[in-house]
Amino acid sequence: MKSRIHPAFTVAGVIFVVLLCAAAVRATPSILIVPLEREFGWSRALLSSAVSVNLVLYGLVGPFDALCSHLWR
Image (cartoon, rainbow, N blue to C red):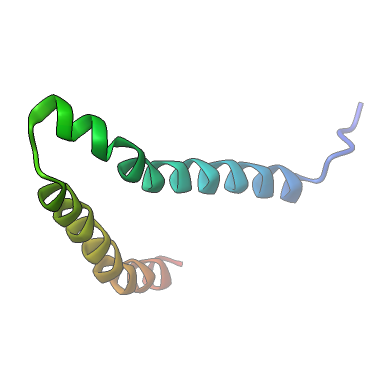
């Protein structure tokens, strides 16, 4: 029997789930700041600077990722 779901909908569903998981991972530092402060004794400034470095690197890698994906096709 032939499947009634077009493969594009399957791809779109998988991409939606992956982006949802990525957004959840990006949001976890704000939830974990207080437990990390208590457990390891780290300051809020140290934790915030680590998150800031993560965001800056994420932004700096974007153009190179776009270039690689453009050259790969």
